[in-house]
Amino acid sequence: MLQLPFIRENKETTLAGLRKRNFANAESAIDQVLTLDQKRRDTQRELDDVLAQSNAKAGQIGALMKAGDKAAAEAAKAETADLKARSKDLADALRQIESDLQAVLVTIPNIPHSSVPKGRTPEDNEVVLEHGEKPTLHEKAQPHWELIKKYDIIDFELGVKISGAGFPVYKGKGARIQRAMINFFLDEALKAGYMEVQPPIVVNEDSGFGTGQLPDKEGQMYYVTEDKLYLIPTAEVPITNIYRDIILPESQLPVKNVGYTPCFRREAGSWGAHVRGLNRLHQFDKVEIVRIEKPENSYAALEEMSLHVQSLLQKLELPYRVLRLCGGDMGFTSALTYDMEVWSAAQQRWLEVSSVSNFETYQANRLKLRSKLEGKMQLMHTLNGSALALPRILASILENNQTPEGIRIPKVLVPYCGFETIE
Image: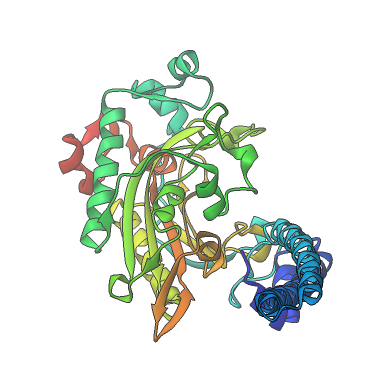
């Protein structure tokens, strides 16, 4: 959530950032915020003045009674009663104004970083770099959804029987390579200085609000109605919320956490070849890295996170590219996002496998996540990234490494899964 003082003092900068995002209601939303903010401050001043008058009058009553001036004391009591009634009305009005202001603020997305390119669609994203050679496959090469049937390692029909579409069952070597990737990604994060945590996979509404999934992404989340809990769309939500309503000692910064969780996304209305097989699922596994940084260090941390994800893709021997997302393709809460995409040789297209984002103070303002730096309480910067999401990584491994004899497993995974090929 944007900070009120920033909007108040930087209206044109705020509007320019929201226009870069193609936020349709930028002018009206910001004007509404500033109007409500002024009304809030005026009401607060009036309330403070009335309370001061009430306290002063209450202090006079005892002195007047002691002096024997009963009439004046009764008049002071009447004035005090009127002032208390007025203060209650003002306090009620202030709560309503603050509620209205909050309701508008939560609809306004984050301001993009100055390096974010203008644009509306994924085609406007900026290619930062491309790494590795795209493999040339044999003439009978197949996409991964055919390979998994050929080698009997993932069963989508069984998943439909048990749960529904988008909930695959991994079997045999398919299950073992899943476990291998999870352990490999976690071990690499530990080597990079991240502390592993194992969070819950359901969260309450406060947690969803804290990281910005609510009230923006209800339609993409599974909801347990009786308990008012949400299945997590990413480990970002529970891990970042560990630090909700926390004042972090400076000595504990930066915070670097990593966690593995299953993730759940409804992904309603997705059809076609681009979402076949492992390309888009309702349940999938992911290793997530989360950082909390001092504001002056957060963009260096973002670059470090990007390099960490790239190192995983290099060790998996997968061709990849890095994109800087344009204003129109960024997530609601992000100030700057890098997407990492791997090349799918059988599908002949790029598949997104990671997003690494800096949210600056946007999430921290919702979370009330602060630290006292140089004697001043400050909101921290939060960052997170997929390191990595498994389904499309597996799809690319299967497709890119297929031969007429079988599928070669990347060397780095062999010690984890215990086999070199799927035959």
